[in-house]
Every structure is written in C-alpha cells, then in structure tokens.
Image (tube, rainbow, N blue to C red; front, side, top):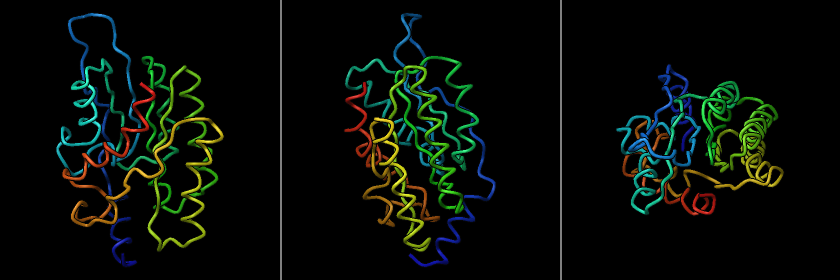
Length: 215
C-alpha cells in the first residue's frame, strides 16, 4: 500500500472519530440470576465503525453464543479512536461497575498508527491486563499489526508487544485480529483500515477459537 494511502488512513483515524458509550448488547432476561459477563474493550475495530452496530463482530459473537446455548452477556465498551492510554484511564470504572468473567482487550492499534512510544503502549496494555485479572476476570488479548511503511524496526517491535505480554501475563492471545482481512481491499472500507460488514464474520472466526476455552 502506498505511503499516501496510509497517510490518508491516519488522518481518517485521528479526525474526530465519535465517542461511543459502552453498549450493553444483551439485557438480562426474566430477572433471573445474572449470566456471566464478557467485556469487549477496544477501539473502532470492535465498535463497528462505519457499519451497522448489529453487523459488527461483537454483535455477531453475541448471536453465536446464544445460538450455542451459552448464557454469556456481552458488554461492548469499545470507543472509536481510543488509545491504550485512554483505555487505561477508562477501564477501572468499568471493572468497578460490575463483575466480568472475561475481558477481551483490543487496543494499541491507534498508538501504533500515531507513532506513539512503544514502551508506553506496552505499559498501558500490561496495566489493563493486570487490572482485569485483579478482579478475577480472564483476559483475551487481541493483537494488532502496522503497515510496513512505518519501518521494519517500529512495526516489528510493535507486533512483538502482544505475544510478549501474553507470555508474561499468561493470557490468551489472538495474534492479529485482521488476519486475512487487512490485505483484502474488497473487505475493507474506503479508508482501508476499517473492515466492511462482509468482513465481520471473518473477524469473529479469528477470535472464536481463542475465546471458547475461556467461557
């Protein structure tokens, strides 16, 4: 992909993306015992940016859980444009609000696209993992990668953050959320960073094998 395209992507990503409040995708039914909760905590890739919210991979995950008879309730607290620093600041209040059996952490991509400090990104992700595990929740870390025009040194170091933290913190890992999607322009929106609705089932299929053992 050309340098111009990635500059356009970066401008789109940073250009006033909306703040999305946490979305509870499944209300409790019948006033019965509270089902186990899953918190999806990410950025625009998990907030269904540019598509209908019901078409996003998180909503599709809730549908699949229901179809398989799983009682889990999803809370999607993803925010378009979120950085790891922003997530680190927001997460404690969410964790204090209600208990979660599982936290799916999908952050860091915006840090990389902005060229932020990798050490700080790693520290922020580590702090969020530790905060979630401190409440008794399991954690699933969703990895991200950067386009090559950021330079091999930076892109490789960025990609290495996720497996390093997964090993260090002993948490489950999806190496790359957009695996098989990011390089297929037919599956990407015109900004070439946000997947189309047609790509969302693939994102779910990428997450699913790592998520199921944590249920």
